[in-house]
Length: 386
Image (cartoon, rainbow, N blue to C red):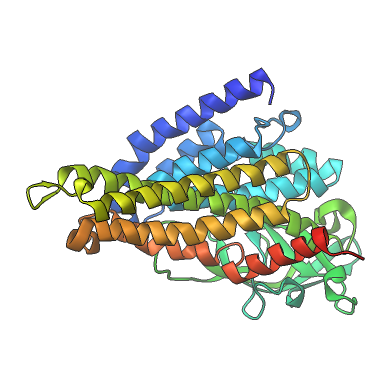
């Protein structure tokens, strides 16, 4: 990074840290238990430029690297993981538009995304298709200067409040292999035929709306086909998912860090058998393991983000980071609960929120099993001799 980029990165990380300490942590538990949309917090994220972080300055964004983005997501998740979720889909879509869209699409959509007042959601998963992206059934038929979009989507984060959706769909249902018939369309949430079917109740990850959507013969201008060419959607979205996996891995680091910091602070205060529990070998060895795992995950995230910053394919690095960090987070959160003892199982402590949030990271943006497949395929590409 240049000196200017380093300075800008340091400023936004510092501001986000201050924002988390002063604005997020004091209200997170109450809002989370109420499952209340944190409108004031989201508005402040827009004002700070968080939604514009990775968009280049040519379109009004901050043009900061993904390494900085990862650090910001970690800080946000340290306060409340759901807050980072509001940013994720927006950044994935902006990345896809900036890297694969036509120049006209970039000029039309990216300045809107920079403002952060109208946010974008990302729709991929369907009732019968999740990890197997090529099996999606949502389709769009071209009719003159528009597409007619029909289908259903599941687990759409920000789906109720998003102004626009990036919709992955089939524009050629007879393509062989099937992924060659997949395209990406930008769809206005207010279009006739777009229906939020229901909110999906979740174990954790509260405050952020997750919905099921339906598209019933929705008319979409052909100018909203990302890149202007049919059949490129699978490639575009797979690249965008690398950004999403960096986000989820960074969230795992932030959430684990919050659990660790709560646990170590408690270990200095809580006494048992005449001394702080930190001084008991079982506890301080557990804390040492927790800190080591967090640091290892952070370094994997940084490696993946740096690869993405260089414009290189990062499916291997992003897959490793997401796999290790999400599984690590689950382990650290449970170890934090062990440190709190019985109190950790009560709603008096933040540990119960961490415990409910952590599993989402294992399944979000591709399950751990899928990450292992992604990693194995990348290793085959690197090491298999012809």
